[in-house]
Length: 261
Ligand SMILES: NC(=O)c1ccc[n+]([C@@H]2O[C@H](COP(=O)([O-])OP(=O)(O)OC[C@H]3O[C@@H](n4cnc5c(N)ncnc54)[C@H](OP(=O)(O)O)[C@@H]3O)[C@@H](O)[C@H]2O)c1
Image (tube, rainbow, N blue to C red; front, side):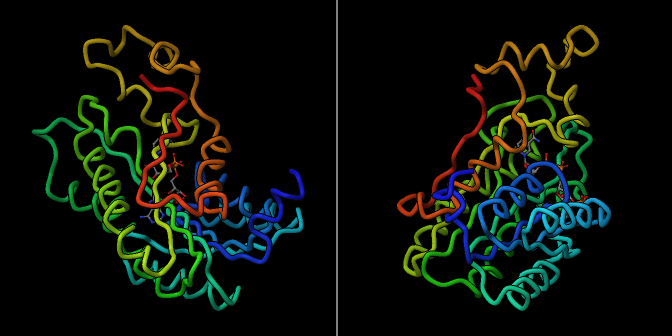
């Protein structure tokens, strides 16, 4: 890491929801490596969150772990308030918490709909609301969409719709937050090697190909770079949008997908 990169978040404080595992953990690592103090939010995996805090502390960084279910806006508010109490400021919100969902139309229940949207969509809107209350000019908000928001897969309607709403959210919020000098963008990751991807890879296959094709084959054939992303490669996109380098970007969704076609 060059000293110019390290300076990007020196003296800054961030909240990363979904920071215990996968993409969020990689974002927390990257922000701390570049100098930020980070509050890592998690839903239930205290062990993973505590291990990450210890790892980052051993590297000389400053991180805390806070349990908060983003489906309950008051808990997100408490996570953000805790970060501000601990660090004295809030410069960056990286909203990474999310849940996957696959099911055919006839099997989707109102409870499924409410849960997926409560985490992926409502959870992100209220995270922004709580974060903005503590941010000043130069604040940076990065939400999480998915390439699935603009690409069709069998049984992916609910998840894709919950993420497409996020892209519309950043577009519209940018107008309001621009007046405060705060930027709000989203990352749309492509397939990334995390627990979520491991648990769902076969669901991305066309139903006629289940049992006939290895899920890794469509990655090789459908992604220009022929592989899943490493979480750290996606985290680099969040760090860019969270940095001063992205000062003139707002309301946009950045696809980091290895060239999905
Ligand atoms: N992996 C991919 O291929 C991919 C592609 C496109 C978009 N995405 C999006 O990228 C984000 C991260 O995905 P990932 O692959 O890293 O997922 P993951 O490996 O399943 O990790 C999910 C993270 O979100 C947290 N979380 C889940 N529900 C939560 C809730 N209700 N409240 C608070 N935290 C919650 C989990 O906390 P616990 O550890 O406590 O459970 C964990 O930290 C998600 O928004 C996902 O939709 C992923």
